[in-house]
Length: 184
Image (cartoon, rainbow, N blue to C red; front, side, top):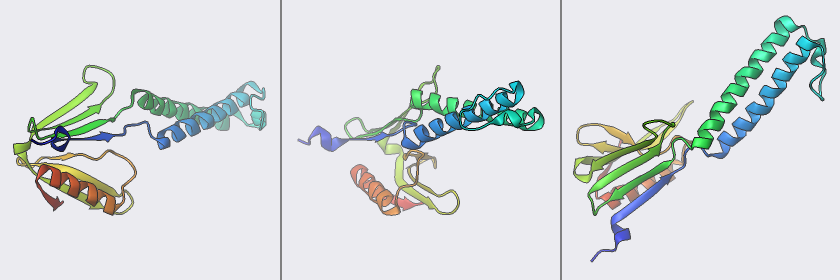
C-alpha cells in the first residue's frame, strides 16, 4: 500500500505578500506624501516639509505638477497595499494521484470570484512544459500542457528563478505525474 504523501503533492504559491511589494508601497507612500506636501506648500505659501522649503515654488506649473505626481504616487501605493492586504495571487497547486486531479487554487480580488479554482483530470494532461525567454523582460515558466493544446502556467509571477532550479522543479513534477517534459 502506498503512503498518502506519495500520491499527493502540493506546491504553495506566494502571492503579493513579497518583499518587493512592501518596499514599493512604502517608497511610493513616502515619495507621494512628499510631493503632495511640496505642492500644497507652494499653494498655501506655508512650509509643510521639514527638510525643504517648497514655498518658493511657483504653484503653476511646478506646484500643481508636484501635487499631481504626489496624488498619483499615493494612488499606486494604495493599490499595491490593497493587493498585499488581500494577498492576490497566493494559493497552491495540488497534484492528487488518488483522485486523479490537478487543482490550481489562487486568491483573486474580493467579490464573487475571490477564490479561483481550476481542476483538470490527470488523463487530460499531455506533458509538463518549460518556457524560457531571456531579454529585457525574461520569462521562466513551467506550464501544464493539456491534450486540447491549452497551456496553464504553474509558476507564480515573480523574479525569474534560476534556469537550473526551474528545470529541477519541472523534472520533479514530470517524474511525480509520470509525464514527459518538453521545451516550449
